[in-house]
Image (cartoon, rainbow over all chains, first blue to last red; front, side, top):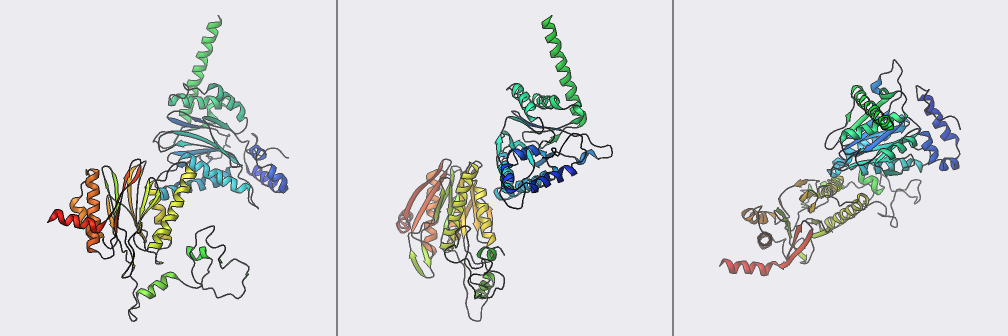
Length: 265
Length: 273
């Protein structure tokens, strides 16, 4: 099979998309069935996304790809609000994600209209997962090429984080990463996710940024961050705020290293 | 229209000679209403037009009045919701039975009352019970009263103008507290503290309004509901039989009593006179 459609060198995903679609149609029916799971997850080897579920806050961190000089940065959005209390970040084909996000937004409002209650995070995740599964089991269609991290608060104030696959499975997580080298990030999170690190909002935000800094080369410039606090709408961090967080993290790192070196002496 | 699509009859279709045409037109008997609920309609018939022709035909003096011949009431108070209904079923001037159950127990936390056409009420509320159960299985938590009444109201809206006759009160206790909604065959859905439906509702409202306080005790509330139904059955010829009373509490409903209205009325006379 040819190279994965998203490599760091590519500035536009246009050629990537057509190669993914071509591959899908070129594969015979048998191979398509086999490829439903792992092969499509390979297609979603996009830039990294990190999601963290704190006690009073949920954080989504996203690695931005460097935009061309003439490109308007604001049109490249990887974190989308599905409703006031739910948002999602995705890794994979942006065009597919647009469709899924649109359907999910409509379903949120439809649910509010019929049931007179906002959706629970689990419900909308199940809806998105069912939608994805339907496309793995019909003729003439290819699966959605995205993995999504869905975060939010339920009506009872409990924060939730779910991850969905192109195959249509979904699982709840305390902290997770998707995209390329997600394993490294996940290992970092496994080591550093403790009850203390998520106790306060600022700590949870720092953990997300630290997890991304592990794998992102150019530092704070290429990170996008969004948080939802209980009973508050989605808040996107500006570049300045992210920079100040990164500076704090670097300071803490230096102090930790100084302490270490003192001990050695 | 939704109904035409559902039962497979198309606009202005002719009677087809061939039984096996390319697309499935006639639902047929064996597969009827198995997968999705369907209403059977003769080919080419438009229910709203048919009904209009019945009601507006003053020359032949054909009038079908869709009246709700019953008395049902429900009211919220500090200890939950009281639901009281009569039990008489009539077909014109003929009393078919005195032992109809006009309250459907959807689940231990939801009750629905019935007034109007008995068949319509029973069918649609049983369908509602099925939807409530599926909601519980899919979402892991019980359906709220507002959602259940919304589902019923949407079902009614879909068949609006086609001659359904149903006046129902959905009562329950969910995470938002005690809930009481009135749902109509027109798709009306109202939330309130006190409702009474049926031909005897004016008499029941009179008694309820004069005796209601939000801080009633349980026994006082039972007495109020009982009295309202008895007086309504006394004056309204389409209501009678028994008073079936339910009390919706935080941990579910209990059936309080099923007492004969004639005995109760004589007791009231004795205490008065």
